[in-house]
Image (cartoon, rainbow, N blue to C red; front, side):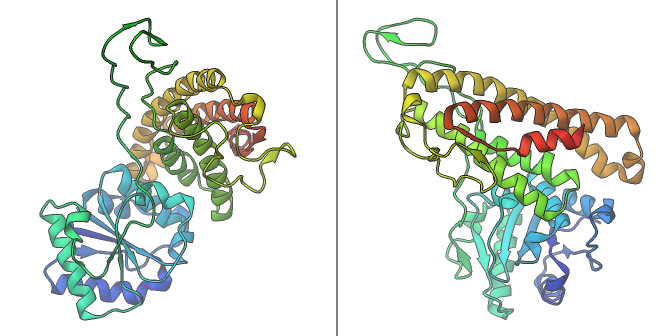
Length: 356
């Protein structure tokens, strides 16, 4: 039977999670967790996927061990895909890798500070009940001592609206405006690079079956790549200066020119050049976004189809082909970013080689 709450956790935290489960039930909240907590990625069961799909609230028990779990990464991505209300419950202090940033962006956390007290459980149960009643997490956690501000900045997950037309003057074809104001050249931007970054990490990298170390390498490189694209968008919209650096550190294994500084070199600090770059990148991101939607549908079929879906050669080939198409475009994006910033991340090329 569906439960109100699905608890995602790592085996090392099992004792606390068993208590959490019982304390929620005592307070009238139906909750479920996998008592065996299978650690091997290949044994991630359909019952777990169904539990996530059918729950209303997804409680993620955060700890240093949890964020290193391949299964938990898959669970969080599935919860995000199915628009579940995610409650990050910080049990043991931990740093959040890129694999979780998209799903947890802008979300308040519940911090137990490693204290399994009645008061903490009471507050959590009240938050969950408010969520079940239709409140947002911000509303549900309002006034709760266990609630902490969102540690990860929010990401606008809706499509960015097209720029509003300015009043007065005559406008030719979406470029510069004649008389009474000015619009930036280039397309009406509708892709959010940071949203697509989160989808690529979840649908292409997390679901690919790599070990955690390889995932983290790829995630960090892809995160920088999409932040570089987003930085060009910000420059084009006059939200960042031409000489400002990308707000994410250069990945340590990226190939770079000795003079590369994470900002546009002086010869590329030109609005026209930035506009040209954004023009091409916008088309590439739309292409990636379209393939991600197709991939998400295929992965859903695989997840809920069980072992039969994993043995379905046609389905597996379709999944592989969509991944290849996405990564091919990402490799082109990496080449564009290398041209402008003199820094090349190798993750797309390595992924493409693996897929071939």
